[in-house]
Image (cartoon, rainbow, N blue to C red; front, top):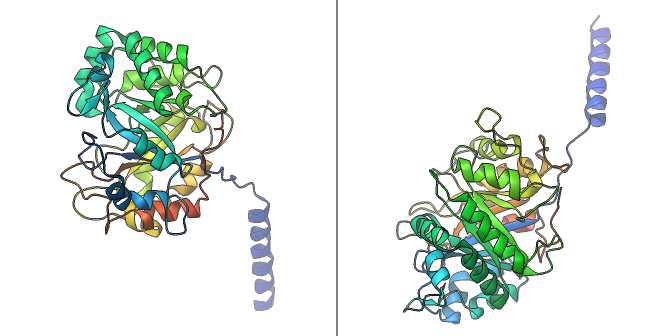
Length: 361
């Protein structure tokens, strides 16, 4: 009796193993974008011209994860004031509307290591200035942004965090003006043609902006913007499921909203995580094996389309934020660099350098 039972158990175990081996597994799509927002040493002001020796000392982990290879393939310098950009302001901290610290020396520091550079326009500090600039002359703002992008050889990120009544008509005019100078380029060959937008962590904040972007600017049939960044949530996610739930809202959309937010192709957005949060180092910066970029990696690389796009997997990760984003946060400078978190992740995920042509579907 025991022998017969053991034989049946063995046959059942073998059958289960065979079925598991034959069952379809979601193939991991390689991550294409693995970047960091960069706030300089003055809480995102970039109001001084940096000494490049000191800049390298503070940021060398970004261009060298320990084996001579960069920790990221994208750096987004944050932030440009949209109203100053419209007016092409010149003052102690600004030249022709751009912070003096966002200069060719800083940009070349990264691009010489095959790291793409973009400038972020806006941020939560400049919501009112976005509103004023858009109501004044959105077309000229778009033309000015395109001129800066061409001159510096960088892309542009739209960070317009107006939650209650965004001026979407004017933002459309801004985008149209930018694209009149720098048409959408699926090859990614021209860095200045890269135009992206930030949306909320999930679909429940910046709702009108998210709906407009998903419907009109990020669709895979006639894309206008290259991709979106799902921003970090208001509070640090404590586990993978909370981060993934936010990102999945973009993939699935919100059919119960009136009007609804349609699904977004996974290939059209990145997910974002903190690397600075308070005065203590966090795993996302220092310890990849305990980090959210590790525990969410399977989701990011395999999440299936749910009504938009055809390929599985999000575009990648963005990290908030390098150097000193706030006086309340630990800076990512020695001895608190993110080489062990972000840098190790770049090696584990075999991040491409430079950024290749992005998936379009």
